[in-house]
Amino acid sequence: MTTPLIEARGLVKRYGTTDALRGASLRLLPGEVLAVTGPSGSGKSTLLHCMAGIVRPDEGEVRYGAERLDQAGENRRSTLRRTDFGVVFQFGQLVGELTALDNVALPLLLAGTSRAAAHKSAGTWLERFGVLGQAGLRPGEMSGGQGQRVALARAMVTAPKAVFADEPTGALDSLAGEQVMTALVHAARESGTSVLLVTHDAQIAAYADREATVRDGVVETEDEPAAEVTR
Ligand SMILES: Nc1ncnc2c1ncn2[C@@H]1O[C@H](COP(=O)(O)OP(=O)(O)OP(=O)(O)O)[C@@H](O)[C@H]1O
Ligand SMILES: [Mg+2]
Image 1 (cartoon, rainbow, N blue to C red):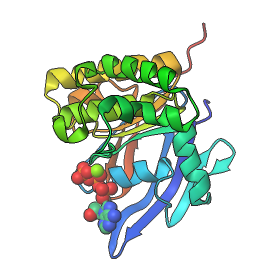
Image 2 (image 1 turned 60 degrees about the horizontal axis):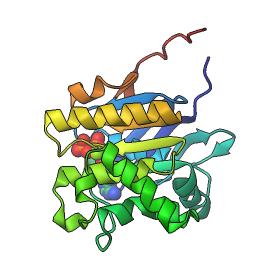
Image 3 (image 1 turned 30 degrees about the vertical axis):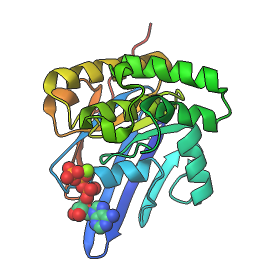
Image 4 (image 1 turned 90 degrees about the horizontal axis):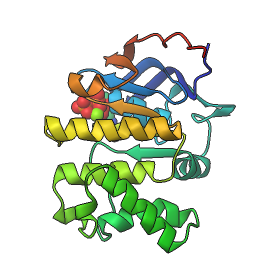
């Protein structure tokens, strides 16, 4: 069986008296696009945040290779989010003072890439997600859907091992949503990036290789991985 890229087991996360997760387990396999669906408030975002090393669960394990993300300190987890993971949050997270181009170039600049090379890659990713025309705009000057596409470009620009995208098409109409999913799946295939995608939209989930459903803080169903193809 394929070794997961990231594996969550028995995650429990409480916020005050709310049990956001009550023993959730999920595997993200290398190179796959995994859709996570489920009712509002069921714990999807919390699960994504735990698997991306943004939130530490109260109980349970998150394994990334030989590492335990649930036990890693803030420094290590924030380094991983810069080097190995890309994250698209449900509610905007672009830097307000920077243009779309500079927002997308930022992770590369932080990694030491030259300004010219970073801007070139950033432009390529903006184009792939259909927002090159907005390159010079700041987040406050873009529509919600344009901002989401810029955030996706920023998550992909470093060719990460995994991208975590929380409702990345939530502000898009169905045609734009399909265009963005086509671009995202294509890019993931090309770079071997795993994508964990939270969505309410069955049409969007249909682009994924596998689907898992979350209900009341647990993963209720998770598709079996497809049998490995031998070529
Ligand atoms: N930072 C927080 N502080 C307090 N409660 C929280 C926090 N984050 C999540 N919760 C609670 O945990 C539960 C799960 O929230 P979560 O955001 O994971 O749900 P979700 O499935 O992503 O919902 P939606 O589809 O509406 O985005 C909810 O009851 C929510 O109110
Ligand atoms: Mg959510």
